[in-house]
Length: 98
Image 1 (spheres, rainbow, N blue to C red):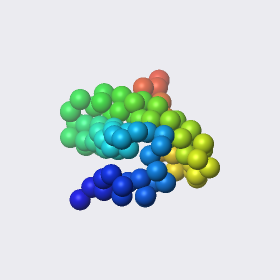
Image 2: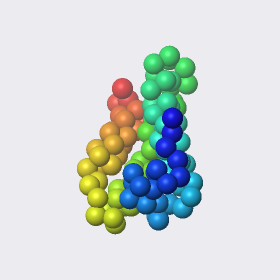
Image 3: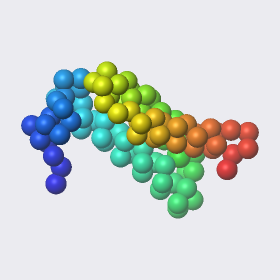
C-alpha cells in the first residue's frame, strides 16, 4: 500500500521542495528507470533501452542529491546510484560496450 499525503510529508521531512505530486512523480520515474535497466537485457528485446534508462536516471539522481544536500541530509545513496547509472550508460554506449 503506497504512503500518500501527510504520511509522505512526515516520512520525508516535508515536501516543500517538490509540491503536491513531486514525490510520487519522482518515484514513478525511478521505478520506470529500474524496469528499463533490468527487463530489456533480461529478455533480450530492445536492449538499447537499458543504457537509455541509465542515462535518463542520471538527471533525477543529480536533482535528488542537490535537494537532499540543501536539506543537510545524507546524499551518499544518491551519489552511489548516480555513479551506477553513469557506469551502465558509459559501459553500454561506450566504445567497448558490454
